[in-house]
Amino acid sequence: MRVGVITISDRGYRGEREDTSGEVIQQMVQGLDAEVAFSTVIPDEKDEIKKVLLHGVDELELDLILTTGGTGVSPRDVTPDATLEVIEKEILGFSEAMRMEGLKKTPHAIISRAVCGVRGRTLIINLPGSPKGVREGLEVILPALPHAVAKIQGDPSECGR
Image 1: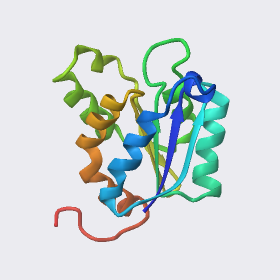
Image 2: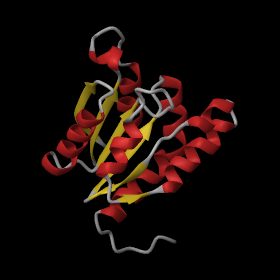
Image 3: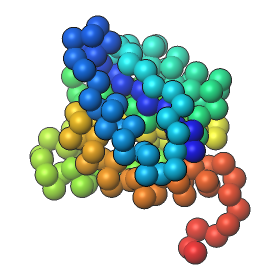
Image 4: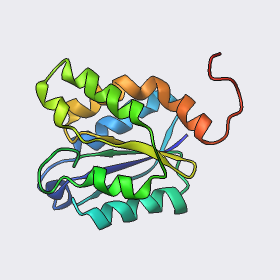
């Protein structure tokens, strides 16, 4: 599986903060027999987010794109908005599962606007911006990612096996 990691952070983009959330993603996907084929840090700018998502899907033909950052309710948090403009199908189960599990740990999880969905043959998942949030969110959905990607790409086998 070819994976892209996109960190969305104004401070990270300006070099004022280390991209530890992106590093957590890269470490965790290693257990999926996955190759991180693309990784970048970009600012919280809707058009830039859309451009990089489209590059990953349409040009790099990634199987999975994991974003970190910009999923809250601050004025600069526009990752879900950009993602909704790029995806063709929303997959509510991933974002609902992450919020439900996060809510067990903090009441702030309920304000996450993370979006998950499909464009073409690529699964796109929005994760929180903190390393802890990334870890906790990915732990919930990681086991389902290979099956989801296989189905998105046309795997005809039965889901109940």
